[in-house]
Amino acid sequence: GNCDIGLIGLGTMGSALALNIAEKGFDIAVFNRTTSVTRDFAAEAGPLADRITPAESLQALVEALKTPRMILLMVPAGKVVDDQIAALLPLLGPDDLIIDAGNANFNDTNRRMAELPGRFLGIGVSGGEEGARHGPSIMGGGPRANWDRAAPILTAIAARYKDQPCADWMGEDGAGHFVKTVHNGIEYADMQLIAEVYGIMRDGLGMDAAAVAEVFRGWNEGPLQSYLVEITAEVAAASDAATGGPVLDVIVDAAGQKGTGRWTAIEAQHLGAPIPVIDAAVTARNISALRARRAEMQAIFGAGPQPITTDAPEMAVLEQALICGKILCYDQGFGMIAAASKQFGWSLNGAAIARVWRAGCIIRSAMLDDMASALEAAPDAPLMAAPTFADHLKRTEGALRRVVALAALHGIAVPAHSAALAYFDAMRTARGTANMLQGQRDYFGRHGFERLDDGTKDQHGPWAG
Ligand code: 6PG
Image (cartoon, rainbow, N blue to C red; front, side):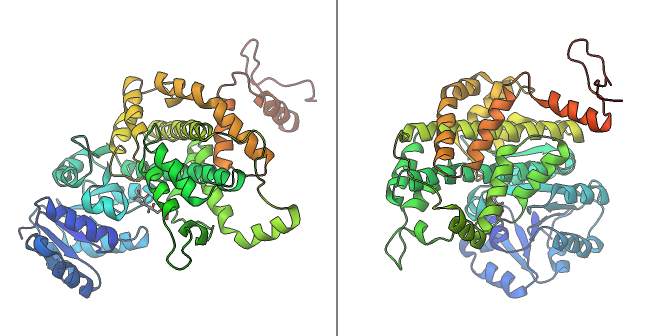
């Protein structure tokens, strides 16, 4: 065959990626389990149809490809991927490369990598349909040589920040899917922080959706410039065809989730890495899903969030609180990445990760460029200690404190902001309170403690008899 690459799975993301690949000048063979989907896709490819070879069987797909072959999987994560690999393997040669571009759990990618040594690559792809079509952010993982083989295509289709492609090799094994998972955890947290500020505006300050939209539109011109703030303004501004009112007002307040944010929380616990803002965001989605229960509890415990009538915060204060929460969230995300790097022996490069996230992905923002510089300058230091971000935190900490306090006093739930503040306070407390935990552990279980004064270990208190 003479196609440069094959793609299996013509769902929303797969179709968009295939068109993107063809548009960048590569010949691509495509296959979908349902043949009519493959045919329709090729028929609707317009001017790109020349570069697209529809295959009606896996055999035909494989035969359409140049050897050694490269096949991109864009099928639902989990068992479907394993089934697809099993179906492909008998048709492939030892030098053929399978690339899983779905939202895989990185533990699965690690396993598949071990089962297919030198023949597998796991890439995290972010940016939704629009990104897949015109330039996603791509986080590659697996043997470096495999990445290098696929890189000409993957960098060609990726988003560009200035003129640098947002596609890079993150590390061995499932490192690409791991980084994508953390990306999604941060995505949940960025979204939750924004939703909480919206809650203060709506319930605390009585602002309507149009006013909310206006504020976010303004913030998108400043330090908070980001895709998520931009679309927040658009979501808030949109009106509903049926009611004529804001569409936000007719959307049920229960968030779905496909699981990647939850994986971040789970993996962070395995690593012992603190990511409380992300944890809070995942938990907030779980709480949002308990809609009937929330209504019952509101009936028992009172009228829900109360208007903030005195000391109402200026918009600038909310903006600063959001900046502060966001920085603390990213400090946690990059801290988790550093912990994984150590644990799995991956030498993940925080600056390279921040660079790949600057364009194409859902969490893209102006701040990520500064984060890339900070992590470049001091790769081993926490983000919050980097001079630029330490300065931001010092400037905005008071606003975060004020917003969390006001929300607490008025019954407005701001779990991600609260978690950010508690993290900040705990992290800047040199002498914490775990001496009490150690005392308790020693009391009931003779677990032993280390003495502060002389550093001797396995000491016991006077209670141990
Ligand atoms: C991206 C997104 C994407 C994810 C959706 C839905 O980077 O393009 O992270 O991969 O699937 O955002 O996630 P939830 O359904 O879990 O909200």
